[in-house]
Image (cartoon, rainbow, N blue to C red; front, side, top):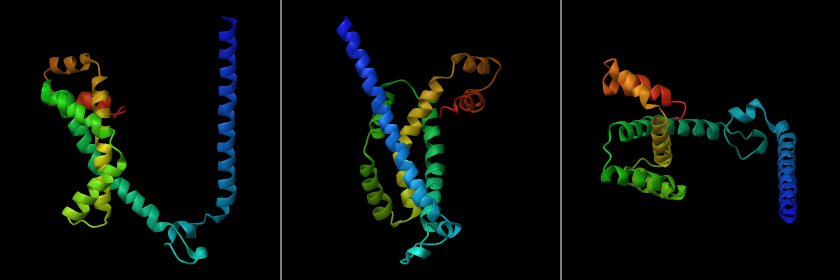
Length: 191
């Protein structure tokens, strides 16, 4: 008993100092990046395009492209994912097909991102001739995050107490009105 307590305390000691060492290295890296990089940040750097000349180089195209890509991804993935999760949870029947769909959605969430990249290349870039565009990238990223949004939506909808559904239906609301005005707003923070 005494040996196990000693081993337990030594693991706590080692774990605590390993965490401190990791935090120290992280702090040191952040400090060096900040002190070396802050002097190079300027309004010109953020608002000019890349250049072969280092003193004239900027990142405008990179951050604008990132914003557009995330906007397309969000505009496509969020409504489709919430709608699919809501349908599967609130309207879908509990049968073998529903179990098969749920299993496949969980499996799609575990697929490596390179597979989605190759899928987007094959479908959006080559088959649909979108080329290397923001739309092709956004749709590919939407496919990547869609299973996660569907699963998060379903879990958030499951967390809503049945009494809210029953109360809404008891006062004469339809199933759609209950879902739209009661269930989804209550589940939105989890989604």
